[in-house]
Length: 283
Ligand code: C2E
Ligand code: MG
Ligand code: MG
Ligand code: MG
Image 1 (cartoon, rainbow, N blue to C red):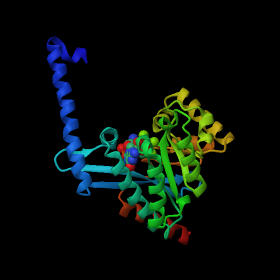
Image 2 (image 1 turned 135 degrees about the horizontal axis):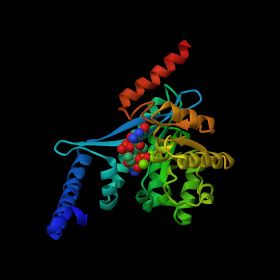
Image 3 (image 1 turned 120 degrees about the horizontal axis):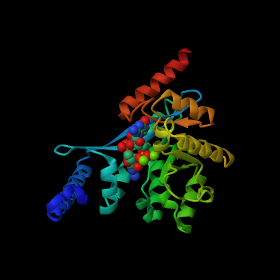
């Protein structure tokens, strides 16, 4: 940063800071508006059983295209929404929309819907739990078709309220998954203590497998450990056949990535599911 700034370093730095602050202020305002005028869309990315190639689930992913700013990545607006509190509304939109969709999809195939939850949403643990139960009842989605994805950051301390909530949801049948596994620092013993039954290996590791022996070793170790702990594993960010072969031969059951499909609209995902069912009926 100091290097970019050059001789006028100080004022340049301030200008960048101002741009940054300004962008955040603008995004804050636009995001409010986007929520109120229903501009947040939910896309779905299929999750496959690697052995059979069948779609067994979908991950719900938020999409926001602002009329002036264009596409804003969730990598940018989710962290912002965690700071300004809008994550609670956003979280509710994705929960309701995705569960409703998934309830319809049950008529085609018994797939699970994976929904991302921010750690911030768990600050109001009781409300969140009640809302999940309510949405399941309203949409008619069976609890065992909901897969909650949270990141390791949620588990940095032993919090009894949180542990009880997760145990309650698990007992209802909800599946609990650790997202972006390998990027955080959670002790493995925590996973079972907190009722988790699935890991999603972060796509950074899958991505570097071809070029890095260390990353191959890490993925192999995660898969071996998951097997001995009886945890299911999803590999994220699969982009080529070599990755599929490697993962399968090391016991990875599930996969997700651009090789199979990018995140798509509910309409397109419905067609993917229908095609699969029609194909298997013919076969
Ligand atoms: P995530 O939960 O780890 O989601 C997976 C991300 O990897 C998605 O990015 C997906 O589009 C991308 N991805 C999947 N396969 C591939 C691949 O083969 N190659 C590459 N390069 N990327 C792939 P996306 O949709 O941009 O979302 C980014 C992050 O934003 C998510 O990471 C999640 O942390 C957050 N996010 C998105 N939607 C929600 C939401 O509804 N609620 C919350 N709390 N967070 C969300
Ligand atoms: Mg996720
Ligand atoms: Mg992930
Ligand atoms: Mg991620």
